[in-house]
Image 1 (cartoon, rainbow, N blue to C red):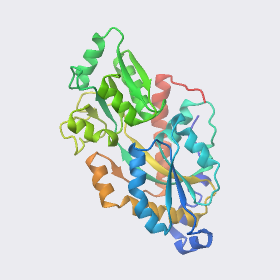
Image 2 (tube, one colour; image 1 turned 180 degrees about the vertical axis):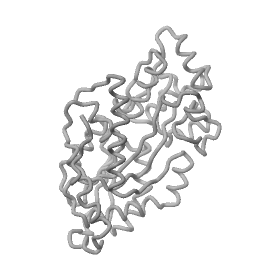
Image 3 (tube, rainbow, N blue to C red; image 1 turned 90 degrees about the vertical axis):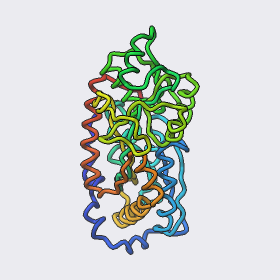
Image 4 (tube, one colour; image 1 turned 135 degrees about the vertical axis):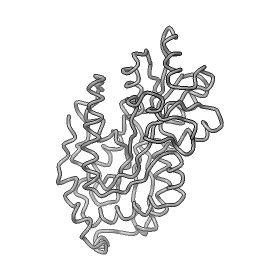
Length: 327
């Protein structure tokens, strides 16, 4: 399945976002009603941290309350289905990752939400993955991990928090690249996966950086490599996958903001302006820069192009792995 989202739903108001006076949004906006930001992940993880850091400035820009509603599970499908069925009035938004639109269409023959049922507002952040391991394992690099895994009769285990999401796919890609025996162990959230690695219940895991920053710095977990073109500021001693000799083992990912299709242009413009205000938060910029992430706030048309290119890239990987999930 391709990501052929109708251009009307994606960019039907792209030009209007730049031309429609934001004051017109007052005609369809009720400041006494809260905006619900549905986050497709558990509380405490990277996207939840992003959302909560954005909310204060968004509330100030909108002049009303923004409530975070965490709806994790089913590879972001639960949250996406909920928002797709909501009224297109700007009061229900979806914060999700590239999984929803660039990965799921290639994993599932059927999805309970229609891709054309969303209107993208903007890409929020491009983030990095890292490969983590229990520090008691006798490895300090990706190459040493591979050599260690080949000596184990039953291979190694790796964590997953959303089957079919980018972290899980990176583990599948590692199996493909190295020929290792690797068994995935599912968890509901990054925090639980991290604790399993610390205890030694699971050997390794691909995941984002936010949940693991302090654990790596304290030595409770070891980071072996990160995606991206440069090392992250917080972990200057951790090489990139390219530096480690495995440039195609894992890929970066992103988070974006979406509204139901049919959301009026003036409302979408107001939401885009408020989101950009949230992304300018100094504390957020400093925190995300330290972990190698970049804050975006791009135009809807550019976001549409990104969706198409990311879909092709992840689709190629999924087809090469031969992975298919039941909806």
